[in-house]
Image 1 (tube, rainbow, N blue to C red):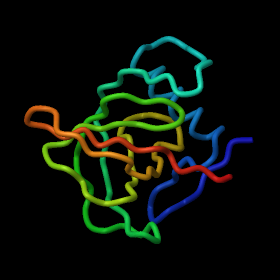
Image 2: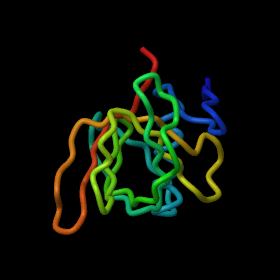
Image 3: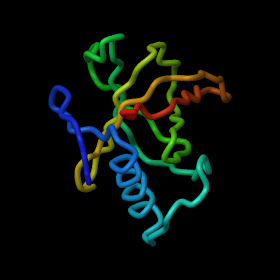
Image 4: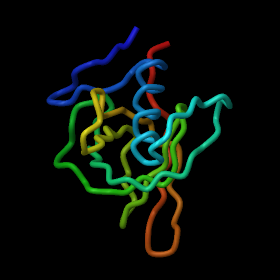
Amino acid sequence: MHETLVHAEFIYADTKQSLDNLVGALLEESHRDVFVERRRRHRHPLSKPVNVTPLSEDCQPLGNEIPALTHDISTAGISILNVAPIEHRYLMLRFPGELRPPRAAMVEVVRHERAGPLWIIAGKFLVKP
C-alpha cells in the first residue's frame, strides 16, 4: 500500500514502500530505465537538484528552503551537497520536477563532511516502524 503524510504544504514519504517508490522514481528519471534495488544499503550516485528545509526537533519548518544537490541515494538514506553545513538534526528534502507524489522525504542527519569547497550532508530517511 502506498502511504504518505502531509507536512505543511508537502506530501512526503514516510514508509519503506513510499520511500522505495520515491527513490525508484528519482533513479528512473535520472537513468531512464527501471531497476529494483536488491541490496539493503547500496548507494546510487545521483546528481539532482533538491530543496532542503531545516526542521525543528518536533519536525516543524525552520525558515526557507535551501537549494542543494543530491550526491547519492538509497532506500535507507541520502547524501546532499551544499555550500555550507546545514546544522539541524532533521531536514525535509523536496525534489522539484515532474515526479509523481510523494516528491519529498524527511531525513535525520547523521554526518557533515567537508569536500573541497562544498559540504556533504548525509542522513537516513525517517520511516514509521
